[in-house]
Amino acid sequence: MAILKIARMGHPVLRNTAKAVETSELGKAPLQQLIDDMLETLVDSRGAGLAAPQVHEDLRLFVALLLSSDGQREIKVVTFVNPEITTVGKETGEDWEGCLSIPDVRALVPRARRIRIKGLDREGRRVEFDLRDYAARVMQHEYDHLDGVLFLDRVKRMESLTFLEELERYHRRAEAAGD
Ligand code: NI
Image 1 (cartoon, rainbow, N blue to C red):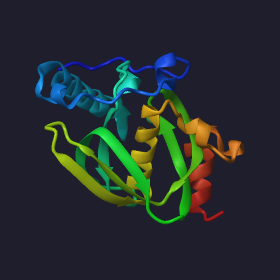
Image 2: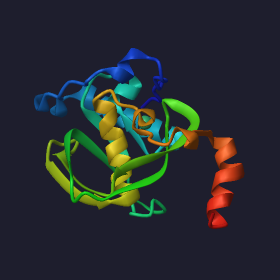
Image 3: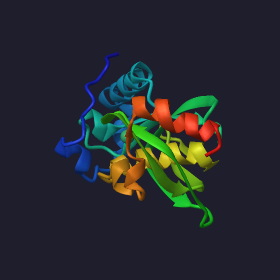
């Protein structure tokens, strides 16, 4: 296993529409190795998700933590190959997001509160989850990477843009105080 280099904002690979994974490749060593390396890189970087384009691979594939709706508990780590997301209902919500390709930056991003995600796991079996709130947010963020979209593209209130250190110092405290 290996820790992979993560592409940072500005690298063209982050702006491509990634190619579908040939499912026959799932049975072969190189793709399984890539998935193992992405999982190791995700753990090492303490991210919530990592998409193949972020490690310079032009493939529709990501690994992510499946979190509880409030984002506080990790349920398991999942791999999605050729995922599809449909939103459920029209409700949206805003919460803080960051990205391993945009280090130490956070902003409030509006996302659908409920989604259904379908795809294949690393063995090529069909998987499907109904998710809401933070768990749904992580999947929408990772899915966007497959279409060359970064979370900054989704920010509606640019004044929420902040460095992580300033978020911890000012915004989180303000939230806790209820203002
Ligand atoms: Ni990201």
